[in-house]
Image (cartoon, rainbow, N blue to C red; front, side):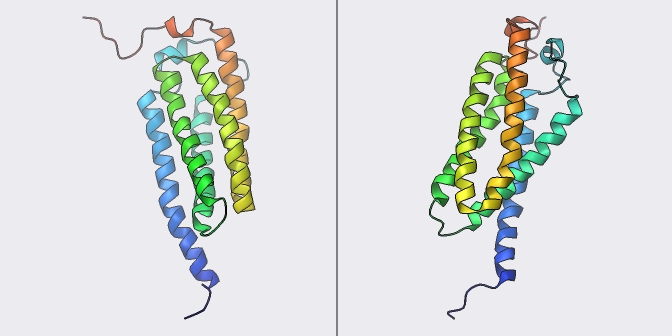
Length: 182
């Protein structure tokens, strides 16, 4: 009974974590975007002046799906690392940054708060960098899986900044979709 778990048992334990984290993270990300009415179908967003380097709409859905899967796999690795010294703080930091990530779309697309969304994304970059550093201390691969997310946030911050610069009064451009006139 004093045997260490076999490699197969260890892989199965990681797989169980991944089967929980991947659908949960992807679903929550999808719901955040859906609730916020994010994307080019949003009347307000469609009316904004955008930078020349703005990707097509489909690129955002594809990128975020891939990023959410990578983030969830990294989280599963850290959750699987029972007894790791920094595991608790790393998971707490992941949850904090992920909650703020989920707030960005409603803040930008639903509330039209471009400047506040930019501040939020800058805070996110700091929190994700810290999460990445802790993940890397626990499992090097988990830290590496967070790198594309950090890079995308940098690009998203640049897009957010340019939209704010090109649309100084963005919150007033179009009436929010929730208002109705009778």
